[in-house]
Image 1 (cartoon, rainbow, N blue to C red):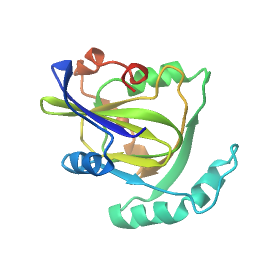
Image 2: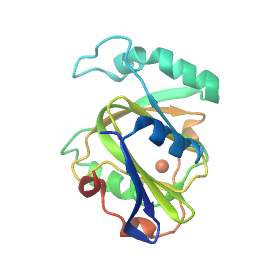
Image 3: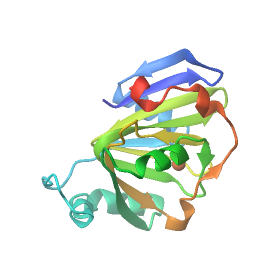
Length: 183
Ligand SMILES: [Fe+2]
């Protein structure tokens, strides 16, 4: 379930806020320049929907976001349990990094957690199916999709080349529980 947890950055067990209240989550993220939205598909999707079918079902929301935020492209990324590439990808995502573009993810299926590092706080937000989460460009963060890895996400970009991880070298991510344990 969509959830936001605010931790001290020096002690993951020091939890300052733990909420599933959408309006509170929205306000906490807005204060960071991040956002959450709830999207619905224009029509039901089959379990084995293709990327084109997924993009078509959410086209009105994607087009609105492009107009509002200047994004130019969208695609679909899918990780299913037992994907042999997941452990390597996971290790890339869980190290603190920044991007030159916003990181915009809509969870079509599955779930995952973003961790935003803002001063002396780590803001963990767990997204699930129906949630759009975005991290503003330049904001230090990391992501975990769990041990198994199980999510299908629409990604929305200003420039696909902008989605390159620049690692900050901050090791704070090592002191936080992985998504499986925290969810
Ligand atoms: Fe990222």
